[in-house]
Amino acid sequence: MLLVPTPFGPRNASDLRYVGEATSRPDPSTTSPEAWRDYLYLEHNPAGWLRETWYDRVNRVYFQVERNTATNEFRNPTMPVAKHGKKA
Amino acid sequence: MATPSSIVAGARRKLGAGPPRYSAAGLVRKGLSGDSWPRVWRDVELKSSYDVVIIGGGVHGLATAYYLATNHGITDVAVLDKAYLGSGGSGRNTAIVRSNYLTPEGVAFYDRSLTLYNTMATDLNLNVMFSERGHMTLAHTDGALRTMNWRAEVNKLQGIDSSVIDPTEVGKLAPSLDVSGDSRYPILGALYHPPGGTIRHDAVVWGYARGADHRGVEMHQKTEVLDILCEGGSGPDGKGPGGRVTGVRTSRGDISAPIVVNCTAGWASLISDMAGVKLPIHTRPLQAAVTEPVKVFLPTVVVSGSLHVYVSQTDRGELVFGASVDPFNNYNVGGSLEFTEELAGHVLELMPGISKMRLLRQWAGLCDMTPDYSPVMGDTDVDGFYVDVGWGTYGFKAGPVSGEAMAEAIATRAMPKIIAPFHISRFATGELVGEKGAAAVGH
Image 1 (cartoon, each protein chain N blue to C red):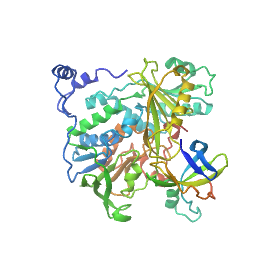
Image 2: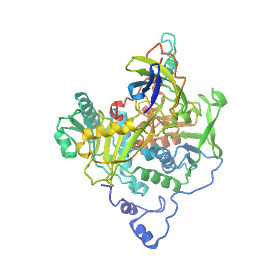
Image 3: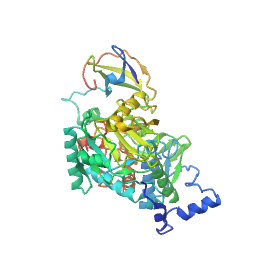
Image 4: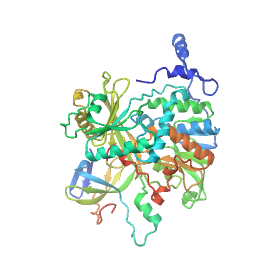
């Protein structure tokens, strides 16, 4: 079991949906194909601290936390609720 | 169920081509005399330069080294592993092989692997216990049945033995399955693939290591790669696109090499980062478990996508269960009770009769997942840096063909046709090879 610090208190990871690495979406009207490809597919995938987006299915809110992918520790659990949906 | 007498069959082939041959007579002689067996591969000093350095001593790395030496005569090769040979995905998978994939590219590729697995015991003179017991992928919904029909037709066009069977036939092949239709996920049919089966994964690792060693390849265990040395690239320290590889820095010193191959699973992103190559990969653990041994009652491999589980029975009688990858990125292979709970529930949904069986142990292996559930293979923007990564949950069954094709790519400096669709450039051009419907258990 992984207890994730959400804006509504700690929740089991199985109550949430994992979105993935937090990235910023380039403006589709001005971006290059390479930058768009990077945004769509490429990942940092570190074995360590990662800023990531989760979705709270009950409260229907996206939020971000920092988690160590090697130890599953969390830090900065009060990350602001993201404005966009996926990969905010 | 294991292929019998492959040791004896191997001994009849002409001598001299491979390492000292194992034989039934040799087994008896050693057994009676009490002589110790010789080391299977040499323990040699690490040199300061090689023609090719392969990072990762699993099936993929060792097969690449073996075919470099056997098919192309390139023997100045070092295989480096930070732990012991076969300590990663090669020793953690559930040892299932099959070729009934969804795309023509995928089918051709995995079928070549199955062909190599078929003759492996003779080629490597080591009994890999290939058990061609048949492979069934169950369909629990109309949608799943439609995908099975689609896969069967793609498979048949490519000459693969694969067909959709109804619940009655499923029940005949595996009587322990609940085909009554009364369950939460009733079995509506299955994709049946007779050439699929299981292989002893450790033997495959040892066989390739032994064969490669005999041809001059060096295996260096407990040798961790700390950095990849590059020059001329656009990034820091000469790494990144436009540059070229000059060697690797290891926990036992620097090695110079014009060609470095990343054959790691789980650490693919971290190793590629060292050369300034970014990959479309995220790493997730896949958990598996094994029960206590019982009499053989499950003659085929059974897979259920809807229930996220696959089951086979080993020659010792243990049931091996695999699941889908964990739902979030993780490098931690500790496993979880939630997994065991869910797995047990799903297995009992399929086979209610085994509720009294006890689990012996559970483990996890790291899977490098790509967006299209196909691997990333071939050269990169850094000259001399090759990748054979992104093997998700299907790396073991592809080991032989990957090694053969990567060796050809390195030796000829051109991408072989069979792996051309898996080049990293497909993410720039959008020509993805979507195998999610056939490669993933949980989708």
